[in-house]
Length: 130
Image 1 (spheres, one colour):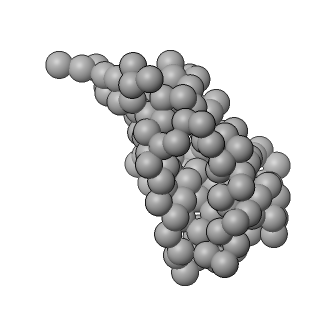
Image 2 (spheres, rainbow, N blue to C red):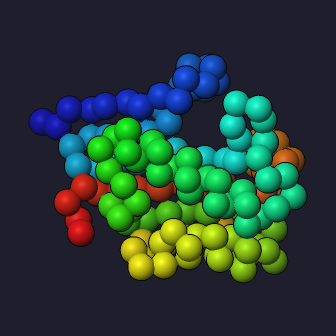
């Protein structure tokens, strides 16, 4: 049986809501929905491209903590508040994943947890898949 490892960001709402930043079971790592926020608050407010870049860099950091990297990503899900900005989201996503080519889905949603966030991204990585 594979050991489960929960990875926390230390955010106080993880305990309140009951989730982990990422979970690794065996060679599979799931990264929870990630928005463009750092210790000082929202990042790239109003800029879909910048928010997407920031989020993917944030996901990369948690993957490294879990023993993986972006080349291990097999799936991303992009939840966006304005699908008309798909090119900005896609450009940033392509800068990181253009050669990796994970499965991806972009879904327009009515809103995210706060109005400053234009996009939220989830990722799945499988170690040893490349």
